[in-house]
Length: 157
Image (cartoon, rainbow, N blue to C red; front, side, top):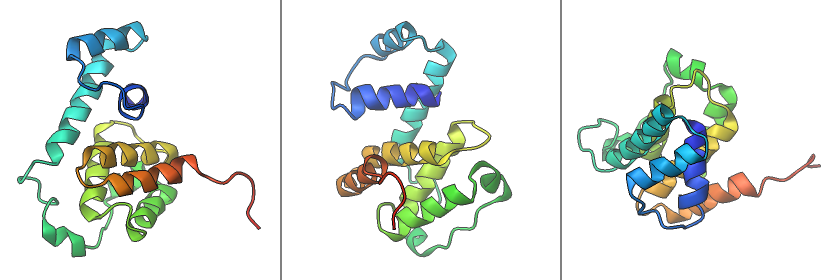
């Protein structure tokens, strides 16, 4: 499913292509690209649920009181997100790329990927996808893009 999300993000969203494609047309294109139909539906559902997160008053972490909350990861979250991933989430929150609400949206979408573990690169892309879909986060999206694409190579002295 993550490969499909990456394909959609790179070919439609990130490239600023026409993103108002009929779902049937999009499904046909993804099938032609070699993706499994069941995984296509899961990916489209993942994106729909991401859009729904922004408009839900029923999700307890989407309230103003969450800004002052301290995040304690559950055992299941620790198994999925290693120390490097949790550290990166803390880093991007501390530097203001994401806030506590966006962090929880990211964690929600990571669990929806149904992967036993998440690598740092996958985490970065999910953060980018979430930021793209949250109104008013354009600056944060640009900062996250810089963190993904402008990584220095080699060793720093």
